[in-house]
Image (tube, rainbow over all chains, first blue to last red; front, side, top):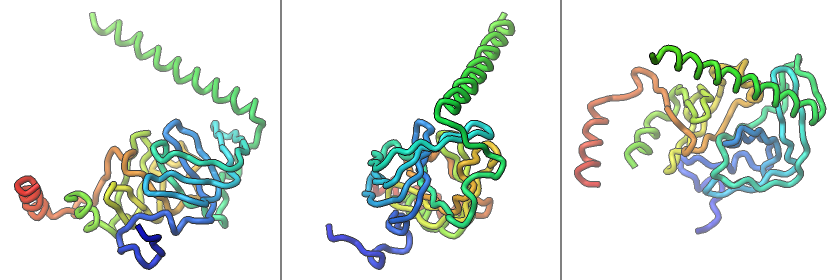
Length: 129
Length: 93
């Protein structure tokens, strides 16, 4: 397979070549958001990100965790978004917090969701008489 | 191959892609490939207050394996042509 340049692709070929050396947001199947510069990719959507950062967001709190040079296996990739450098990545009201604080906030959010799930279970039991 | 050809016909139209993680993104279909990976332009998350990460993302690549639905414009499909193509594919495939 010869290395295809930008001219070799037919009109409807989905290629990440246009995104090379750009700052991208990668959303993973486990819900993580990784931001980094695309250095390489392949047909399975495996990607190499340089200067990768994991961005965690809980309501108005956010935290960036630096990761360095990352290879992400394509099967975990949900979406790869091109970040517009001129636009603000995050709404202005968001507050930066430490990693420990964001983990605490995530735990609270998760407990809140599980609490709601339990409530639904109780409702089902009472109606299935 | 049928759906790949079908999506190629829809390039340039506005679609809403709903993913298996419940994220719904609307945008203009830029390109599609044999894996039904989708590239959208002018993307906008349908419920953007719930997903603030995507605020400055205007173009994105979506892996085909994570797509649940692709919502099409009501006039986006010529049903008869699609029927014929499906019958041909079923017969010859």
